[in-house]
Image (cartoon, rainbow, N blue to C red; front, side, top):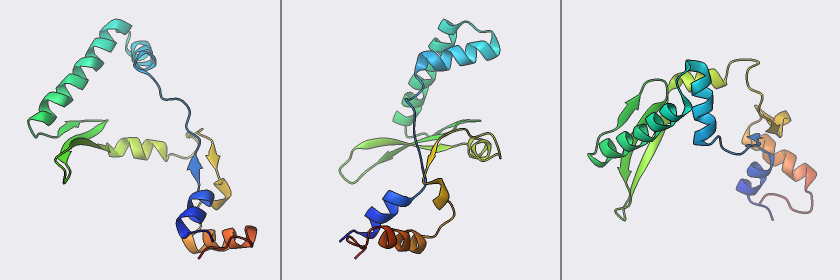
Length: 131
């Protein structure tokens, strides 16, 4: 028998992610928008990384307007992590009508409730219904 999680994960809408944009691509894009040399942009991005690490090690979240907040955290075992909360403008920009060109798997299931996804699973998988 399938679990609720299995059914929902199989049928929920999700993005097909392409390979991550690397530092060089990011630097080229920024250079093209600003006319700042690619090498300079790369160095600034490297220093931004170092700055976030420096301040996080001091227990200070780093707020970068337009990008978001990077906040240090610690788990029960004492392992440190850094959480990222994107700037609201990024989320709003992704949700503007007509601008997102990412491929969506199960696009027909956008807006369906979990109960509907489970019913769809049970309908299409009668030999493996949700428990």
